[in-house]
Amino acid sequence: MKTEGKTRSRVILIVLAAICLAVWLACGAAVFFADSPAFAMGMAGFARQALQGAGWTLLAAAAAAYCALTLRRRSDSAKTVLVCAAVILAGCALAFFSLRDLVLDLPYLSRPAAANLHQLRFAEDVLHDGAASYMLEGVSEEGGRLSFSVTHDAYLAGLEQSRGGGELCAQITYLPHTDILFSLEYETGSTAG
Image (tube, rainbow, N blue to C red; front, side, top):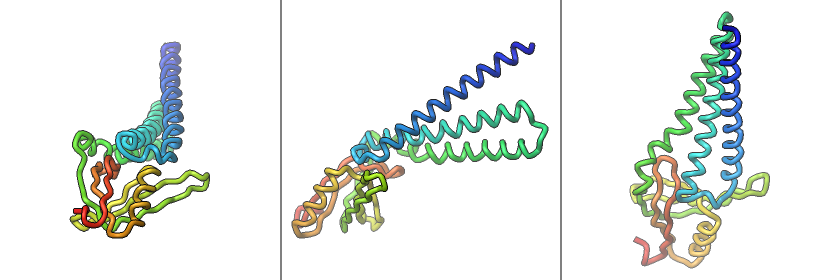
């Protein structure tokens, strides 16, 4: 019996180690892709967001599994039970909020929402390590302010066209829950509408 319990514990520890390795790799890749403006739009942007959500979910699952094993082994202490229960609940909440918007946007992948934006603003945010992110913000026809990450090329094209005179507008398609831009066309002056 004792050998069976030890074997089971070893298998569980190996599975937990594999989950932790997957979390480490996913989080490392997510950090790498998060800093790259090339992965800001389209399916690449959605994949980046999904990878980040999966990384947080795996981290939460690993913490919950560790706590579940801890509770199973030594559930004598009320403090241990409370801490582990809190970690498990926090992990469930983290997983839910990391994946909720991604799941809600799945139906929009084949047919993204469309909008016409006016009163466009462009912003560049240079991070401490020299990486930059580029933002496009505008007002939709319904009056709501929308903000999106864009690629460096889309940012430069918008800045260039905004210097040409007349109001610059944009026709876009996007995922409404994750705010990932799928397509972007700038229009100026009389062609806008």
